Image (cartoon, rainbow, N blue to C red):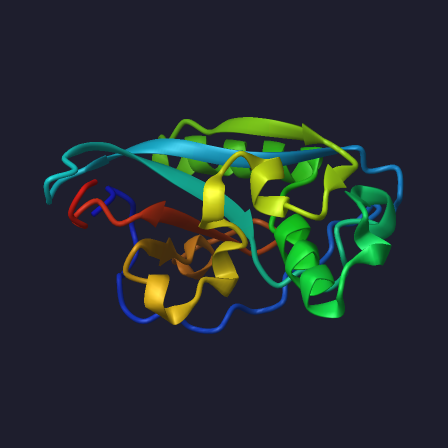
Length: 179
């Protein structure tokens, strides 16, 4: 398990994330999206060493931006594919959110945060390919049969959480065979 405060109990439903004042949640000018991650030590299992912990937003009250301008081919997708692409993009961070998350994790937990940065528009036809993260995203919509593969940590549920948006972490189960 990763070394991060919190309980590994069942995950409660996320509360909607408030919108950051002055960030422009629906602005079509959002051209960069951030995919923060950390390397955290593990204490058990065959995957001893470090695991990659992906941080993501949960429960945005408004979209991160105009989907049609953020995602290539968005209008041509079937509604269920549009919804998956929307959830995918809404898990990413704006620049201001990334900096707040990084400061929070570094000061509160001593955890270094790195990021991949994507420039929009992203390919909506294959959103998983666009993130270079395989089938891990969108994390919150992980099918029940794969929930033993991807474990979730509701950072926003920790005592004293102060970020103005809801963040969870996801990582591949280090105790799974082949990891």
